[in-house]
Length: 90
Image 1 (cartoon, rainbow, N blue to C red):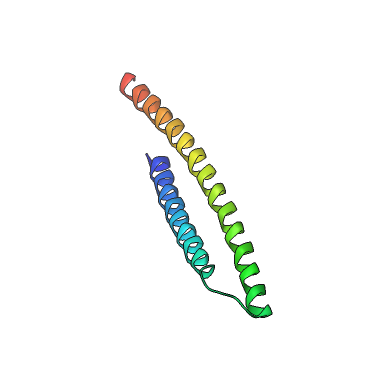
Image 2: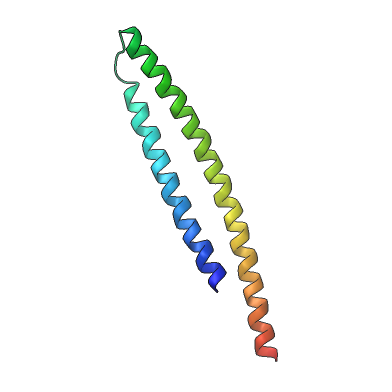
């Protein structure tokens, strides 16, 4: 049971991280709507694109972690069920 609680907590943290990452990407994308005429402005925008790309990669990693966590949760639930069944059988 305590393992499930730990995994649930991790799932909530992953969800929060994904929401935050998606929000940051959206905010960075809105910068692209501005017109950058100066060299410094264009350099800034290039850096924004790099950061946005990095965040998109991070988001993909978070999605993979969420899938892995889902599999771990199912395995823990199966193990907990087996433990309960063994306790009831004895």
